[in-house]
Image (cartoon, rainbow, N blue to C red):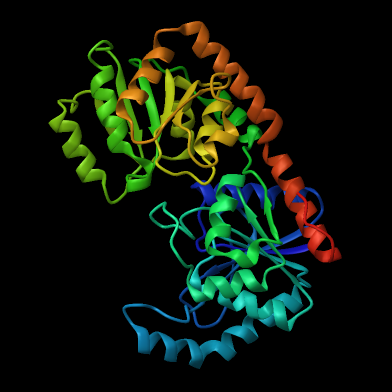
Length: 389
């Protein structure tokens, strides 16, 4: 197959970037051809090598409507629409593209819905979370451009059954073409990084990797940690990530007298994140909502015990009481009790870490993810019949 992968950015790190990069790598290994398309500033398409090492193109994809520039955006979209469509059409024909897979759809990807009607290609739209629910909560109605893109799609892929159900609440047109493909972990990469790490000595710490925003609920974790430190005075909390609420969370830590117990590390590269995973005592994710929870699967892949809120796709990764502990969201007391249970029972922590590793190795390897995507591509190319991954 010849596949075009469309994503909003050319990134090496991040949840969506890792999923798409690992997918592209496995597709090429299986003998398929892959090219990338990203939005960019140039008025004419520019060929380049992506950060993952694939052939990619930057095209100035304009959204049909920008809220703070309503008139100007509509005029610019209409004026440049023929040129943009010509660029995309010629690219699809030149590379003999059969399947276009849009990941993390944004409003400027409306062009690919038009391509689906103009050319003998198939369109797969993969939704990941904040693309549809920026604040983590379902909205009454999706933007028109996204509804058009989904209506044109042959398949809509979600990373969990829970998130697919949320999507169908605002995109009912996807009911007959929705399919779940769980995100995958690159065990090869984890092994390479882990072997390259020198032994490090750390004070015992709990690790959380999450953006500082409302849906990740780091405020709940900080309140829980204030309770935990009453009995575990040598323990630290390391927060990897950044975002609009970081300053607010730093202020909260100071108000809870945690300024010397919590480290705000910002975003870090994959090698350092791997070391942090390897050396932590426990991994915690207190999210209020989570379409999948790739970072939870990564923690389990490092054979770490996990405490997380039982929301969204997390409950499809963790079997509560067997491969981790799940708690209700927005409950600092319940989160603190679960963390303390893990900290004070070494055998429980080790058994859950082992069970979690086995579960992600079996179900959430990126080889399996790629195979499922290939089955979706083959199904839409064949046409007719129910989708199945």
